[in-house]
Image 1: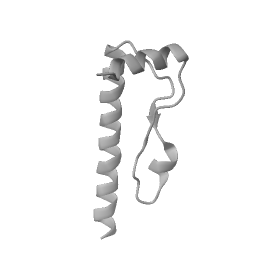
Image 2: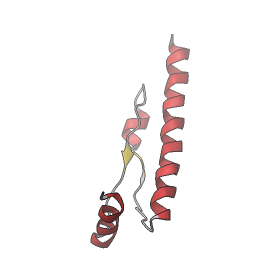
Image 3: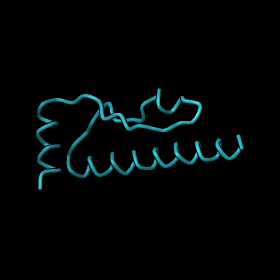
Amino acid sequence: MKARRTSHSALCVEEAEETLKELRSALEKAGIVLPSLGLDPVSVAREAPCPLVELGRCSVETARRLAGAVAP
């Protein structure tokens, strides 16, 4: 059972890392860079990781561009 949980946890972290790469790429294509973008280390370090994406802080100008990129 523990081996299955470990492999599931590894898959969750791999999926989170891949999603993070996709998000970073999409933001860069929109001219947006979030310097603190990454996986939350606490959520990854848990016994059964459930990764969260940390968007972090950004400048007002970056926030404005981000809002413009996601607005309908």
